Length: 382
Image (cartoon, rainbow, N blue to C red; front, top):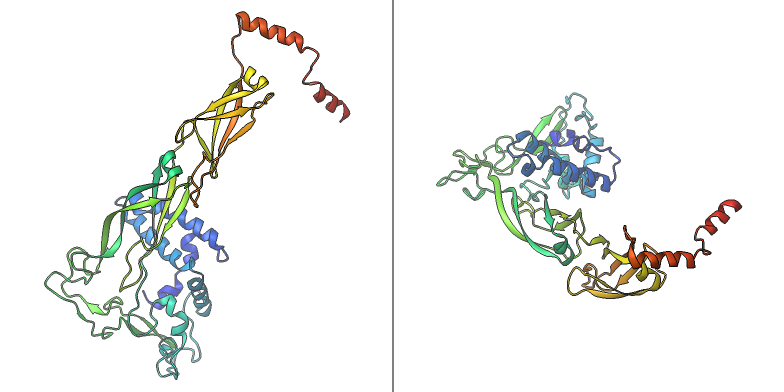
């Protein structure tokens, strides 16, 4: 990709975010688009694959504050819509801006090449290492696994050095030759009116080498889709939709560059009995009216291990929450949260015999105690 093409690409438009979008907004939009257009979710759809590459390229620049600033400055300098001629108008003065990007002929080097070196990945005459792309994937855990942590296998597909040609791009038994156009540098000086800008060599596509007899697998690119299975440890206490970053587990870099990162979005299945509130687990436990009115000891199930017994105070109202300490989810420091027990007073649908007689006697004994009296007093005083 030439410097001109790079600067004229509107990465904000690719992601569909405004130019003043925050880092959080850019990340949220990228994650949504990455899930939608990920190759694993669009088998055989080349358009979705190309869209995924564009999205990843845009996020690679805009997610890095330094690269985003350089990108914005470069687009502002060159008009954001194309390169503009500087002094000399149509270039009749023969002013060579190549020196501005390469620093050639200047004392101490420097030039715009130093400013935009990180953006265009060409801080000199040699092709620079390129960091591998970040990889997104998802995994679904059972409720118990999320609470205690689990090691799960993840099958990943990403771009890596072609195994057939070991990344050279040449067919077995042959070797690439040095590009005669750029003499192995991977960059050349191209005229753009009054500009002479350093850009990747078109003949070798910035690799510095020419492949006369390309590899049948990667077709001379030196890169191919690589599938691998990794055992990934999901930490204890992970929550539904939490995103975990595994540094250096993404796609391999080029020319000795660092690998990208792997981002795993975790989904957690619901449990038929227990719920989750942060580091605490929740459970609803039914109790009888006599238990709620008179109090007592109730037995409560736990997610792991034996049940626990909790003291229920006399006069407990429906919805009262009791706490069983240390029976919740595992925290990052190894300690555990609590089990929050919500009391649900159960009212029998059918009452007969001695139970019916006892309830009628209870009603007569408490007839003077109207629980709604305070409600009416408050309504009248309002």
